[in-house]
Image 1 (cartoon, one colour):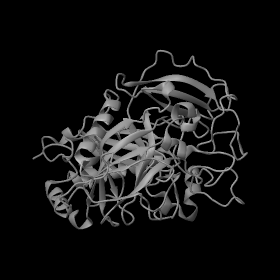
Image 2 (cartoon, one colour):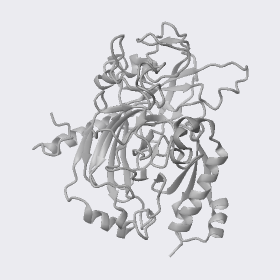
Image 3 (cartoon, one colour):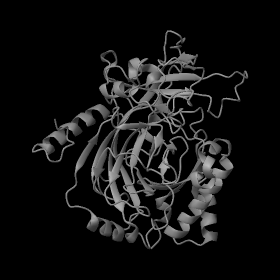
Image 4 (cartoon, one colour):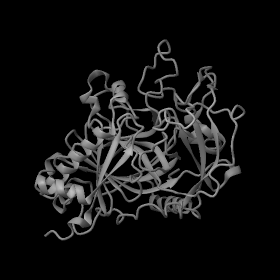
Length: 482
């Protein structure tokens, strides 16, 4: 049955309106603290304050089919890939530039509390299925799939995010730029009748967190906190339900996990001690966004989802939510966009290891800008993921701008021992300097002065292998320019 996802259906418009009404009902109020929608399908920013110039928009529109279609990509065991990007993946949907795609995403931490985040949810149940005989999704990570070699499980957990996709954009080629507009972002309501109207997420203070070797008592511990979000729209905050200390868990295949070292391990709460007296009276404003969103890189067949890269991926910037637009350089044919790692909220740094990992559904519009049309525009030399909101431009610096290329054959393991905030800051500085000089035609001296007095640099994350620093410049700084 058409759910507003089949443009050939005679009643497509009716079904799509019904889908939108359902989505609106579920999210109403949930996004009160999010970004203001940027004029629907119009180009972000008024009075030309966008990276897409009127001339580029006109050239792109001339290449775009007149009929805009809407596609629906659910999250289930047949549509997700777990823990890796790959240029060799078969697309789950093919679209034209300008089409809209509704994409469901699942948090890879759902099994931290399966009762609240998996039970009764057909799509989630298919993905997180794990019995002594089979897994719904066997490969989890970019590592080995040879049972004779892996120790933790297929894919070895070298990459952790449940990614929905990829989406193939017809006509996309290396050298092009893909514009990804996030039109909407809503929570995935709990399907368990016991928790009707609610959504849940998990925050893991884990061994990869920045804090782990600096605890006051010197202890080594991982603590998971489960948060509740109102899926019906009356509350715009998350609040803690309980926390528990991770204790060794034995997965259905009989492998023991002393730490959180493999994604999707079912947590047996008969072995944990749950503390329901946690963060009482604390309300965390929600900032729903997608932690991992990006294209397939060209450098390797299977690429760990954890370290971000020049084509995006696990940037973990809470600003990549409703109303924002991302620009990515296309590295492979079709672009192959995947989305996952959905978050209800996160602070800059993602310090303890994760955000509030919470399943979301996003509505995206994908617009392809061809290399031949980019000359003389702000996107002409774009070779990194760029974020635009209604009021700001953001560049993303990493310890290594393209670690897959810079660190050689062992890049996917070497990156975890080489990152630093200093390197990420240097990369963010260089990218912002380039941005100001090319898009605003500033001299280097002008750009350096402006960066010190009018650009905010912040630590995006210190937990994803390739650490991140973002630089934010407000558009209204340039309001007085002719």
